[in-house]
Length: 117
Image 1: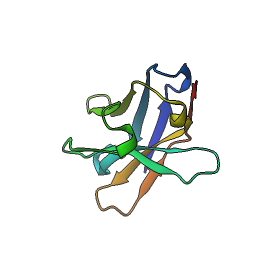
Image 2: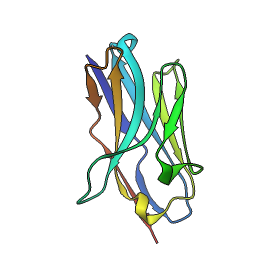
Image 3: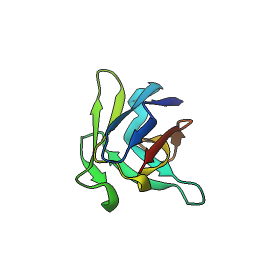
Image 4: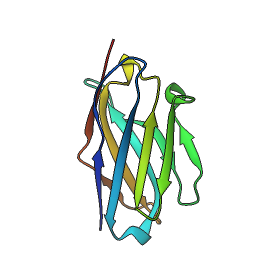
């Protein structure tokens, strides 16, 4: 079992920055990729960024050049640095961890990010 807990959300003006953190615990050795998803009211949950065990990254087109995902394996933590935030980035952001087999997905409780115009 893996547990992931997000932190770092909040309210920020457009053009501002926030950094989200996701701390993983439990069977850390079984984790392959970790990522961030977001869900705005009335919308489906969508991928924001993902980082593999080897450090490869992938981003949604809408956040490329503004968001950076990184990981600190010593702290079992993944970060999402969000710069030049836009009102359309407003959503609940969820951390996700995928098992090595791809069979299991673990989700955090979500953290609210609100960007005012």
